[in-house]
Length: 128
Image (cartoon, rainbow, N blue to C red; front, top):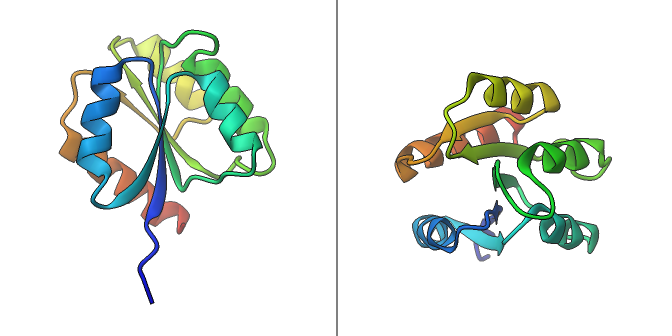
């Protein structure tokens, strides 16, 4: 029986970040990339269910905090692990995201291995 990969949703408007993450994670995950929170929500509303989400804080159309609110308000996706990436090392932004329900917050530039471990730890905790 083939091993089914976990699905990782990447939501970021920076193509270089998306390429790096897609390349790094494609061996272990089925990677889906969306350029903003609005398109990610549309994808989710079409019945898709990722095992984990990595989303940017600053995006057009729907920013990270609004995306967190939408995900956590959804009965279907409320439990999905969610990590926010941000170019700003702002304690206020971190606290805002964590209060809204993000599982973790990582500042760019980041080490993909560190992000991978954070995702793995998060998935182990929520037992996807």
